[in-house]
Image (cartoon, rainbow, N blue to C red):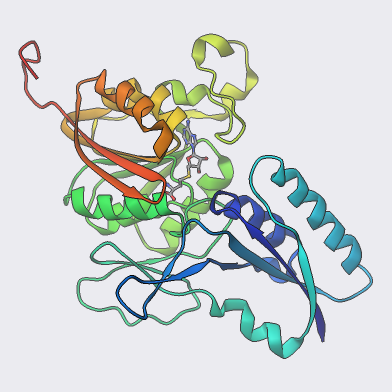
Length: 336
Ligand code: SAH
């Protein structure tokens, strides 16, 4: 059998959306995500290079439909290219044997933090004592463990989580952070997302990993009234009275959390600063991530205007994650 391999280099941030496009047309929904590699600083080791483009590939059956499919992919990528850097679509005819092996060989077990291992379901992984194994396939929603912000959050969740800590993962995507928190002992774990596709993916992943994560459609405070995070619609309640879309997002009322991890974007964290703080228990920890370095001060200003104190900052490339702790003193009238 003959196949048309289509590939496209895309910016890190376009990986999830571009993969969805390729998965829509590609054979069996399969997409290879091939990150750029770079030599390690300490000899012949290899690491992902988060700066250079990632190559995405999929395979189309070489039949009379193929040209129409190729054109539709090109069109969809063109639209995406208006918002994110997307390179040129390349094609190449291949024989069955080539692609059958190519398909999954680019995936690896990812080792993150001290103990976390992200394992694609088709790979055998011999877990060692102490390993926290998450079985996650690259899927529809953001959060395959590839993005630097997700990696930062996983490291920080691993560090700050404690058994029995009431935890919220706001903007759960694939559920990766909530599942990691639950596997590390957090309880209960609530995972919220205002995108129904993410909620579905997170539910499936939580079930597949046998983790007791409660996944719900919704957000916190003024987040309940925002449109999709990539839509640029950040209007809060006052501006959006009468919108029917509000009805789609659930409202979840809970007890305060000991840990909140929010891998969103700077703008959303800034808008939600007060709501995030209000949802933290005294002494609670907020991990705020997804912050591009140029916009860090905006988030810092918003969070520091609340009763939070910065306790840690981690960077990966141009991304920053900030960790805040809520004051646990009864009397907050004194000096902070
Ligand atoms: N937590 C995952 C996914 C992060 S991507 C990870 O770390 O990899 C950000 C997610 O936040 C997306 O799934 C998006 O739908 C969701 N999101 C964006 N704005 C939101 C808001 N205001 N309320 C709830 N979820 C939001």
